[in-house]
Structure formats: C-alpha cells, structure tokens
Length: 114
Length: 110
Image (tube, rainbow over all chains, first blue to last red):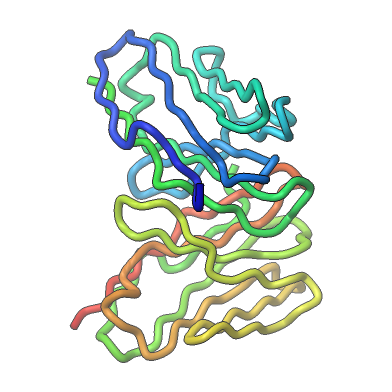
C-alpha cells in the first residue's frame, strides 16, 4: 500500500481481555516500530523489528505485551490480560533498513480498556 | 525515556504570526527531526537537520540546531489555521530507537 496501515482504528475491550493490533508497513520497508502514546504525551518507544526479528524490545512495559512479525512484513502487537492503564493510542511506523532518517507513521489504533 | 523536551508545552497565536518552538536534548546526535501530529492522527515528518548543519529551511519552516547547547528550534512563519497541531522533536538513541519529546501544542486563532 501507499502508507502504513493499522487496524483496528479503534478498539474497546474489557479489563482482563486479550487484544491484537495489526500493522501493515510500507512495501519494501524492513524496519518496523511500535510506539504507545498517552493523551497529551509524546510517542513512547515499545519495540523495533529489523526484518522478522525484534532487534530492540526494551520499551515493552511488561510480559503482557508481545509483538511478532513472522514474515518480515505485517506485525501484530499482542496485549494479554489488559489493564485500564493500557488505554492509549498505539502507533506503528516503518522505514528503510539501517536508516537513521525519518519514520513513516500509521494513523494509530486507539485502545480503550474499560 | 524522553530524549528531547519541547518548550513551550502549549502556544496560542493569531493567524499570520510566527510560531517558535524549542527542543532540548541530552546526548550527542547524528540528526534531529521534527514531526507534526494533527489531533487524532498519526505523526508526519516535517524536516530533518543533520548534526553538521546549523539551519535548514523548508517552505514556511525554519529549523536551527545548536549542538553546543544541545538545542533546536522550529519556526513556522505566517501561520495558518491548518498549522494547528502538536509538534514533536525526535532524536535517535543508537540506530534503533527514535525518541520523541513531549511536544508543543500549537493553536492558531483565526
């Protein structure tokens, strides 16, 4: 596709449920990033994929959060046993591998945990 | 961790005026970037300035970088209502993590 695509755009779930958020990066971009953004804050780094492997997952807050990218393209962020504090916008971005240039962001998935 | 910190946190000006936002960062950098985010949308890259550059222009945007003070500024000239958004500076921490500041919320009043 022309840009980074994220689904769903909005997700409302109940505390304790499992959630999956999907990111489809720009074709040819082998670097993929997940960020989390709370209201009024800047994006907070979660994880970086280089191809299929997670090269840096230092931003994942705890073991309830997990992300995969099995074929080096689409990525899924998985959140187990959701808590109200997980409510945020989850942003995905992609870039050319090895670049320290700009990131291309999707529109985000807004997660609300009731 | 937040590498960059923007100042002010919020700025409200009249249409046609210039808007200046500042960013400070902590460690040495290869480049510094500015992004814009409209309410409820994703981030859009505006401009990148390399560590060996002192000033860069793009349309109505002017970015300066002072590596000795570890600071950058973004100037938007002749502001328009459509410039209303949040603006973030970002720097690379290593080669794998782009770290953003808290942002400046800019409001342009007609």
